[in-house]
Length: 589
Image (cartoon, rainbow, N blue to C red; front, side, top):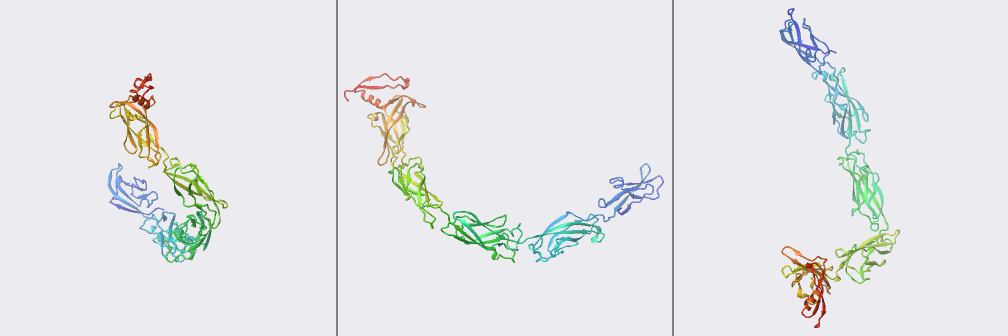
């Protein structure tokens, strides 16, 4: 349908124009886009519409009318022509969405606003063409009442009509209702155009139902000493499973003084999983009676409370099993001297059978004895040495030797227990000390560099070790060439008293510890006599020929008194040549 057109002319153009003048029309809709909507009769000046107009696209046009000669020169004008497109009701109301969702809490008062519907009409808002009215034409399902909701015709607000008592999520046939909403223009008159949309309303849950146990009494059986889930407690709750009004929380309110049990909620089915977290003892308590309470995560509404069905009793029967013997104390710690005679008493193991309601015997055996030092009486549990205890053994750590034993009862089937024996070994002076290092260096000339430092070592502990006494060997005359002086409790210095040629000499030393009784060790230290400068020492190779100090001493002592025969010098490098002397005759000795 062609919309009505309102024409207004601004300016004056004489209708009686000469024959040599024509009318011309300019502007949007004429010679500008959208071109050709309006045309003008060049002789009469009548303006015509060439095709349909759409007010919702362009609601008015501003044109210019003028007269010109045939060459296009303006004779008169231009005059302003305003064309207004008058609205027709050609647009239906449109909802922005085809489906709307809302929710209302169960038990809400009558008149509670659920949601607001809003439609749009493209017609002229100043006319009835765009004045909308809303109406509910269908409710599904229509129980318990076909008019559970009402929509405000002008504002589009959907409110509840049903009473709070009937708006009960748990008793309604469904928790979701679908409303078909119609919006009609022309203020809802019969000739108005319509648009429709669907409103889906969900009745949401509030915690108006307390959880209830399905049984007042639950039974469970568990083996003593075991852990884990022993029974699942089931509850009913009519509230929405997707909310905290349905999710259960369990607690043990009595019967668990030692906190041997724990209860958690299974998130999949809302059941309470009762578990043993500390092993139970059949011989101590055979039957446990627990009182369990269930609550919701969300608090109940004020007019609803937890009743007797929100608590349940759980009877847990403990079943006995053959338990292994238990050592006491564990570990057993004793102190013994090393090197005590084989067969000596070490300790007496003590293992008891926790199955006090049964009479069972216990036998002992060795489980782990790294050094093979121990034996155990299978009946009495006495531990004796089967080899010498050695504190210095690699099997001893921090003076402690650890062995493991097994106690086995005669139950069916037999059960075992493991106990630890720790022997703290006291030291016995059974290791002679020794001198370190085994090689020392001095300079051939008696000067500040003719001193070497040596120390004592001992595998034993104080007081069976330091202080050490280090002295020259008993060979006569050593003190003419060497002197040993104590520096501290562990070290001494060796001093060369007279010049010796560059060579390696075996110096006999005697080292004695402080044990009771003391132990001594005769040893030799290789002393390298070197040629020394301010910056370097020249010593014989550690593997070069060595000169015996005994022979050297004999030579030095006997030259004035004896006849001797000089042998041919050893064919060595000149710097390492050593003369060997052989005593031939000594009449005064």
